[in-house]
Image (cartoon, rainbow, N blue to C red; front, top):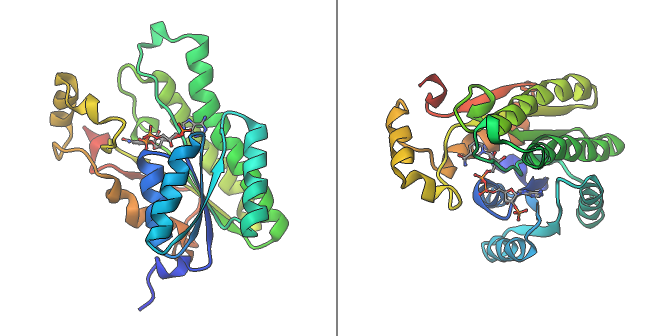
Length: 254
Ligand SMILES: NC(=O)c1ccc[n+]([C@@H]2O[C@H](COP(=O)([O-])OP(=O)(O)OC[C@H]3O[C@@H](n4cnc5c(N)ncnc54)[C@H](OP(=O)(O)O)[C@@H]3O)[C@@H](O)[C@H]2O)c1
């Protein structure tokens, strides 16, 4: 029986923020499912390492240096990908940062950094890729990386939470406008997932205490996202658009 994964054969997927964490993991999963992956981020050396790993496993990957906080860099990265791979069928709009600070202490620079990456960056990546999809006429799928913190707030993450709530709304707005071009736009809203970057936080007393408040008293692992991302990247999710789907083992209900 065909699976959602089989349906990615011949598909081109662009993953932003693929040099680390969830983006790096998902690029590998989508490549294993048959897609050719444009892996994008600022750290070229890490992208080249990941491309080598994907190709050693029999997949195909194109490293593309791209800073999502710079619209000119996004335009160049999308153009480079389309020139090299012919098209983009799926965008995993994943690049993101968090600044942990009380709202009272956040600076204008903090605000710009978080919003330029998580919201403006995601907006113009989606727009640039959607333009290429519309020009080609074959439809496409966009998966925005939202967050539990776009659904509920926690202390010291105000800028991040605001950016992710706006990203969820952006998902609905783009889905509404682009359905006529057969472009499906959805967001996933993961709970806390342990990655290389955030691991030290979970070893602190505060991190351990937060985990004890989660209903399942454990963190997620990156592979927890695989099934949902494969579904949203494949034609099996064709009637799903404008949806923000929590994937958090009920952490949002704590
Ligand atoms: N981990 C979690 O618990 C969790 C939960 C919910 C949602 N999320 C979301 O999932 C996404 C990935 O998070 P993560 O935990 O994997 O974080 P991570 O390990 O810190 O990785 C972040 C990625 O984003 C890239 N990035 C940051 N700024 C960029 C920029 N200006 N231009 C291009 N790429 C940029 C980084 O690459 P370079 O530095 O090389 O550019 C890196 O590849 C984020 O949107 C995050 O908000 C994470």
